[in-house]
Length: 149
Image (cartoon, rainbow, N blue to C red; front, side, top):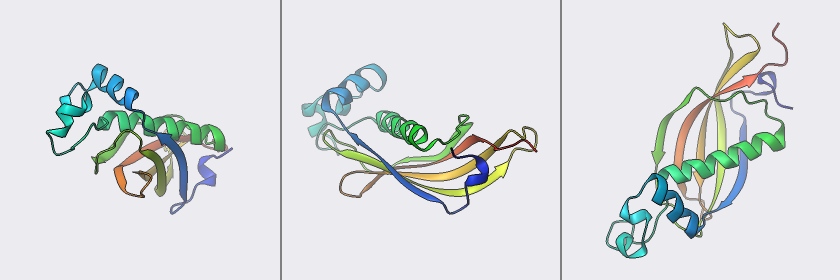
């Protein structure tokens, strides 16, 4: 199990492997981001994307699935998140890409008002199979402390 006390500024982790599925790209976009370049090859070919691309929100959702799996596998004592800063979609994500995550801890602190939890600020970057960064953001995480003392 990983508690606040186990996390140090500078800690890094690499995790995840998520293959981007063409049918899922279209299904997600159809429901949540129905822009033409997320829905059809023909429409996407006429844009700067050049071909069907995943919605950035779909990329963020696939990233969240990798984060939750990592927390489950490592015993990270997550209590959720009050938000993210500096979300950037840096490069398009295409069907067939395989995404992975890298994270670096930037700050840790115990909550002054809730001693049973702490906060971690990190930078998380998502890469494709060619090690090209496709998305980056700074999440603030809430995590259990080992003791409230």
